[in-house]
Image (cartoon, rainbow, N blue to C red; front, top):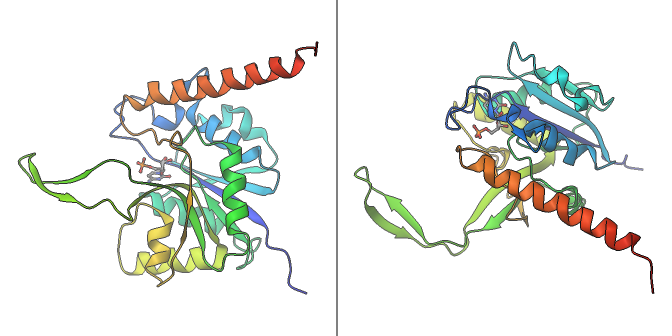
Length: 248
Ligand code: C5P
């Protein structure tokens, strides 16, 4: 009888966030009193089928150990790499001997704190029997422009069939290892796992995600993420009080 595939999560959190422009890396910037990384980990840890979360940290990271999530028995750390995909590859290496090729690995950016556990569960449900795996993504809604070096429109790019890749992205452990290894051998830089898997000739499934699963990249994103988290918190408070209201 085939063994049931298990699910591991990987969180690359070793970036310096240069485009964000703050003194501290963006994964440690506070949102409603909690660092970005703490929110991102919280969404993954809320899903019970996630067996372990491997967080890739930059050398000399002293902040992670102070997060409450660092004490969660499912959370472990490994050393990050010089690029995002190298951080992910190190986390996969840390799972060697424990994860089997057919197990699932879900990779989620530390810089996406607004992820909802319901989105994680939907991704898992959509991919459970998928031979390849896939990712949360959003159909492009805006008109797309290709820019010339002088900041003027070169042309308009048809948006039909175009999606924005989000995270988490979820692939079989064996497939993802092979994909990242090939990618390194070819000395290609990729910005997500799906593009490495596509280079193997596979076609990851696109699973529609939420528009509020934003990545903190530029300074203005912090306020937006805080507003999204505040709205989520307020609506769950409201839901709770609605549930408590006595029936008349
Ligand atoms: O810079 P960017 O927003 O694309 O980074 C996406 C994620 O990859 C972030 O969570 C960042 O911390 C992580 N990263 C990493 N190692 C690097 C560069 C980025 O873990 N060398």
